[in-house]
Amino acid sequence: MMNPRGRLFGLGVGPGDPELITVKALRLLREAPVVAYFVAKGKRGNAFGIIEAHLQAQQTLLPLVYPVTTEALPAPLSYEQVISDFYDEAAEQVAAHLDAGRDVAVICEGDPFFYGSYMYLHDRLAQRFEAEVIPGVCSMLGGASVLGAPLVYRNQTLTVLSGVLPAEELKRRLADADAAVIMKLGRNFPKVRQVLAELGLDQRALYVERATMANQKIVALDAVDPQSSPYFSLIIVPGEKWQG
Ligand SMILES: C[S@@+](CC[C@H](N)C(=O)[O-])C[C@H]1O[C@@H](n2cnc3c(N)ncnc32)[C@H](O)[C@@H]1O
Image (cartoon, rainbow, N blue to C red; front, side, top):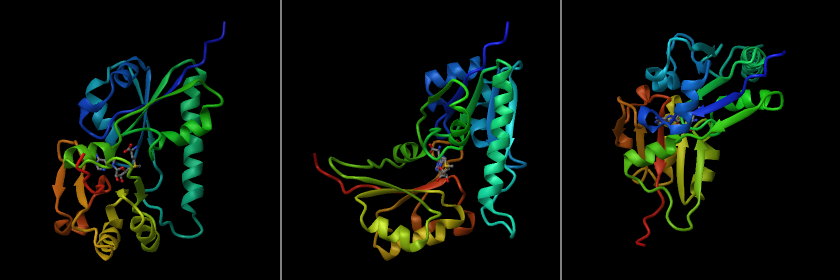
């Protein structure tokens, strides 16, 4: 008889504090024969660090190593093409286990469907295999909690922005926002801080690095060293307080 096919799980593992993983994600993680995770070349992987203590010896680890660390590639290479080929390959590596009847848990920091790389596997595999996503506490919610910053009051609208956007685009969207979260800072930090200053939002904006992780750092926006602002950081512009 043929093996039943394995199931694909996208497991949100939360923003960093290992206790912020859901009961369901932890159960599925422990049950999975194969645990896959995206990781930069030469790094341990952020999501991997969060769940490492729960792994068992018999589980197979499947690191999916990004071929590049920056979107700026020398011509004729195109980031979109290189990364799309990589996701195709990664999906086939995962599919080989699923075809052999092994469930694969792909761990993802925060939530898998909130800027999570898992989504690129999901897009490629969810039509072929049974797939389930377990939501996680996303970084902006972890960030809001450690900053003690209620995000949106009453009927306010929250705008989530990527720091990668050009300054003009950031400015236009922030000018209209009741409350905002800006992700993907790192080398984009100086541009984002400048835009916030131009809009007079720099006094309201709050900054956190590695929210909820053991090495979390909360720094005043004007005291952040732009040379060392890490990728795992975000800015929150909380909504105006409403005295409910
Ligand atoms: C590829 S996105 C992943 C988002 C993740 N799936 C989530 O649900 O939050 C990476 C960005 O998330 C943010 N991020 C993730 N974890 C963070 C943390 N613990 N503290 C601050 N920012 C974090 C940073 O802005 C980082 O550039």
